Length: 127
Image (cartoon, rainbow, N blue to C red; front, top):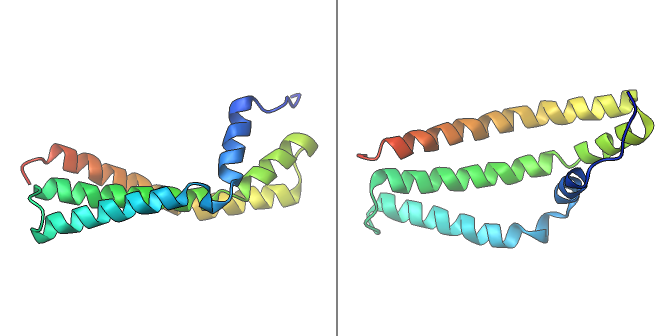
């Protein structure tokens, strides 16, 4: 198989994952704080929110946080994939990729569990 240059979409994705944390974290921090505050206020009865909405806001905040965590965990993967595309497979690159996948897999499974809970809360509107 011949190696071809990465398509522009992959270059954009590589930039996104390799970008420093503060490039978009402050706006998301505000969003996370607002989601958590609204969800907790709904649970405490300060805001008149149905239970399923308050819980869904908290689950959404958790999903965003986990998504940011996955983004940080994937940072070492981009240079390993670029090295793989340029120089072919190497034991160091394979070890890096396997290590990133081992660290990221439980986090991604947690994210999927939270998405499943959020989908249930969308169905369970009478709560």
